[in-house]
Image (cartoon, rainbow, N blue to C red; front, side, top):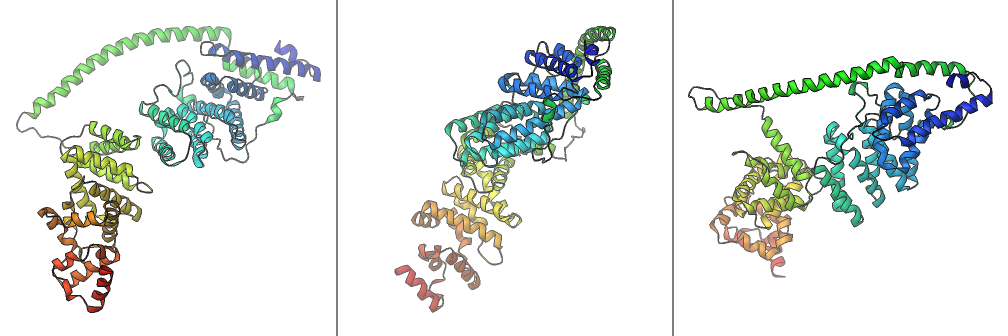
Length: 549
């Protein structure tokens, strides 16, 4: 029939052939499903998809918009065609990008959702590049609204599992953006719930949204052809002229060429029969080899078990050298696990509960405290979320309280190595622990307020800590705590009110005076430590005016 239609070169004959081509493409596309997808592929390859690629893309996009539940099937169908005719896959991705951009600017939420779902499954099938997926979600979350966040959530539910394998770090950044939107942006409760559900899906490993559904993994990895179409490309052309009939001067020649391409793709009848027979024999041999490999794996498993048990017996023998891992691979993995646990939690209660479930070997407890502080320092601004985690851990077990006390001393000694923003976050974190009583004031014993013992960074750190304590506790409570009768507190704060020499006294006084805390604390420490009326008369007069006014 194809040859009969191809023999006619007049407009009527070509138009009839065009109408027939429409039916050959629209029919299989509308009836495709998981069970008959292989038969549909053969039917489509028998039609001239080079000439009708515009019809194919239009038919597929319409069908997908009307029934989004079949999106994985349409993506798998295109993945097979893309391996033989890459121009078809590239045209489909291009049209979907253009359609998404138009729908986004028109605020057409339904069309945006169907477009991003199709792009997500084309990304899963390695037709579209993963960079396009990150560009789409970045555009949606750049200025978050209820609709844009809803579209982004729908998109990540479909493509999240694939991106977790390909680019986990970038995916973590995307979910950090979702978390900040959840905590800071003013969005509807319904959308907030959708984000929380998305986090739960991620915690479950996207088990209900695999990249490729069962029965649709039809293309080998080495045969996949990825099209690098970007969202911000200005020269994208949808080639809409391919959707309408146009007279082809070289019609017969082009039809003969495609017949040769179709035969090369599909092969003859005998070849296909032999291929099917070969596939059956391969499946039988594959099942046999699986059974053999299964028995071999069991034998190897027994051997591995015995090999695992042997070192324990050898370790008991004297003279056997124990191997130590100096690469700290396990420590790096532990730190990664702690960080991901914190960042994937929606509340501090959940984070603390998960952190306590992590298996930490004896001697590595300090890593958990350090990672909580480091995670806090990496934020743009301080979040009480981290302070509440530290407070909960300190109050649950003294081990963590001791760990954070050691971390305070370590951070204070190396505070000059931190950037200003990181320094502020760490100071707010420890101020929260001191205010809530999670850390004892004895941790301040590392502070010696002299010019030689401090740096500009340490003074900024101490200033933020004291100001936060004054704001949260009030001056009376802070004054009472610093003047506590507890011997440990008295010894700890002694370095903050130096009395060894005159220069140290003046330096400490100037520091407190800049914070305006020297007046609220009534100078009682300075009189106690012997500074008293030895101040210069002019400055003493100013101080007394502030005290007694």
